[in-house]
Every structure is written in structure tokens, then in C-alpha cells.
Length: 103
Image (tube, rainbow, N blue to C red; front, side, top):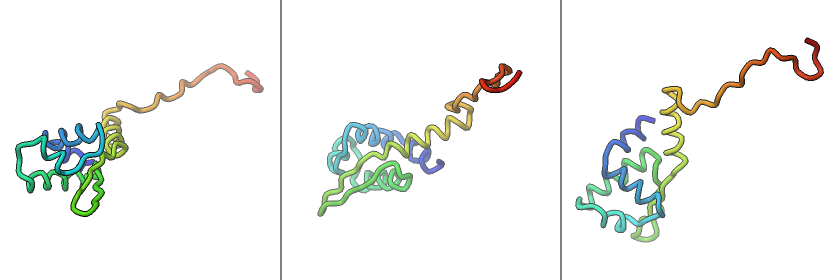
């Protein structure tokens, strides 16, 4: 979970995830949204890959990135649960007798 939150800490990486939420994009398409160098974008992509938030598909010289939403959802759910958010409600104990049992 720490690597996910490290990846999410940077606004550029959050924007990359937001863009990928719409649809898969090539490295060039993603880079066009930012005013940083290609090596800097590559470093951002590597952090996101290390956190398992995106996957890369290389076809020749073109790399297409896809968001791995389930990993992001799992990390956020795990984080919320550390604060007691998102736990399923425990069934209420009932004092009433169950069908087929005596009171």
C-alpha cells in the first residue's frame, strides 16, 4: 500500500491516472498533456508501474498504458478500512428464537 500512496502523492501521476481512467493512451498521448521532459514522464510511468497502478503494452516503439483500476480500488479500500470505513456491517445478534428451535 505504501508504494501506491507514494505514486498518488504526485499531482502529475494523479493526472496520468485520471487520463487513463478514460481510456488507454500511448506514452506520447499522455506526455502531450504535460510540460515536463520525456525522461521525467518516463520516471512517472515507472513509479506508477512499480505501484502496479498501470500496465504497459509495448508494440514496436509505441508503449500503451492502461489503468489497473482494481489495484487502485483495493489500495483505497484497504486504507479506508484502517479507519473503520468500508467494513461490512456485522449482523445484529438476535435474542429471538430461530425457526425450528425452542425458546
